[in-house]
Length: 117
Image 1 (tube, rainbow, N blue to C red):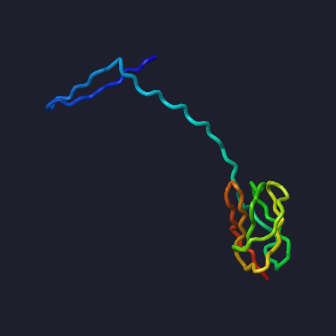
Image 2: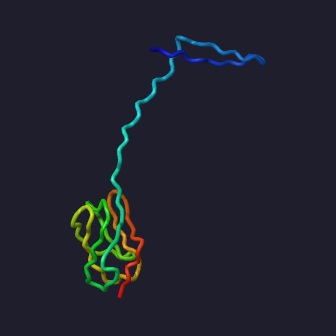
Image 3: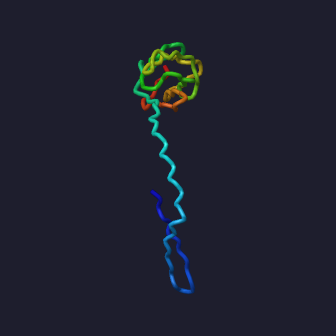
């Protein structure tokens, strides 16, 4: 069904509206499909304290494909055990602070502080 477009013109103080059946409104673009991207989130870690070389288990969601893990900004070696669990080693140079997990889907940061002992 064709929809007429309304044209408006102003003539010396008079407003004139004309329906133009030959003019057609541009077709509306189809809406893009919604894609629900998986997100990465930090649930917790254990133990809450440790020293260089200790293993810390990090839990959360969206960990598959993780690109780095850091203890208060100091990156470390890690292994993705599952989409919800990472095993990380407390690195040399680590200090007390938050843990972060970087993935292609985003970055998750702990709320709790890891205490370096």
